[in-house]
Length: 107
Length: 115
Image 1 (cartoon, chains in turn purple, blue):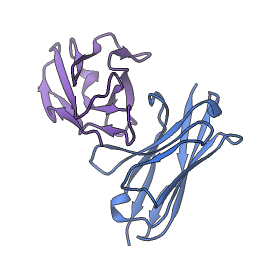
Image 2 (spheres, rainbow over the protein chains, first blue to last red):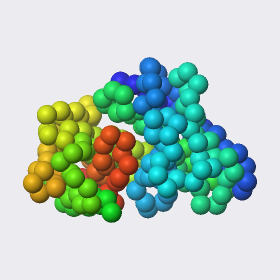
Image 3 (cartoon, chains in turn blue, orange):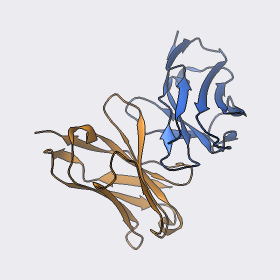
């Protein structure tokens, strides 16, 4: 199975900060990488797909990038509504696997 | 508006069975593969199963293989998850989500396995 190692597991940041979350894939997954945001008591929301494609309705301060086997989700200027847990997901090979999650909190 | 609504969750004893449903609306259900994903209390997301649009391709996580069965009825716009031999570790919120990019999720159905 493909392992997705997500870091950090938690972080705190201030409003307006630039924030980056990373997932490393244990095997080549090409661009079959998505990012999801989950707020307390809510279903996950797709933010990025195909490693770099912004999902419909997602603010442009969110972006996705890839460097080799490392995939990153970046929030260019943190807003209060961005406080949530973020998960990456590889979908190139079954079983699909999620990263462990990153809890983003306000400093 | 795309909508997915799960039902069928509840409290069940270990070893018993339960069947979840996910009713889809707002899109042509028969054109899309579907997934089940679960989330144990306070834990992360775990992909559980996938079924292709015409049911030709089905995949399971190892943790549920042989115990869970995913199926669908395209005439009823409904996805199912039949769960048997339930264990305490199956306790979770079960979501259905549209493939291929999980761009739509239901609100989840809660399953608690306990004696």
